[in-house]
Amino acid sequence: MRNIVSVLSAAVLLGGCGTSNVARNEIMKQYKQENERYSAMMKSEKMVCQKDGESVVVLNATYFPASRSHSGSEHFIVGVYLSEDEDSARFLEKLRLEGKAPRQIVPISEKSLKEKEMVFIVPWRDYFKVEFPPLKEERFDITLEDPLCEGKKMHFAKRPKYIFTKKAY
Image (cartoon, rainbow, N blue to C red):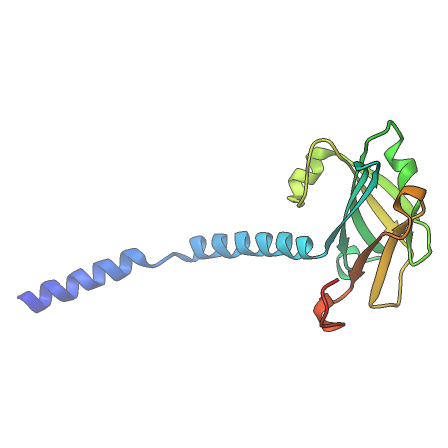
């Protein structure tokens, strides 16, 4: 009798702890979304340009490899904070990817950013989708042709950066 109760208790316990296919599929879907979000975060860089100790320009750029964009172009989502009243889209025309100017700069609404669950969203920045001509290089830099940001770069790579060097960027 004791053995039968033990076997039935174990069966009920194990049966209740298992997950259904629907629940398992939902968990995997959520994992893939989070994994994509954190992969994008790993391809994000920041540039801060200061004047008299005050941050005048802050750029956050997230790189999306060509496999996601389908056009072969290099795509970035760039967040811009400017302390002075200047048009953010016009300011982004100063961006250079290995010396090449952007092909297209399109503003992105905060609502669409939240739907895509992008990282580094803050309300005081303007966000843009910036498209550059395709590059063959595996590693590349974004620079800003502005006197305040002279010599500053954001380093990106099409593959994980640790493959190229043992040093941190």
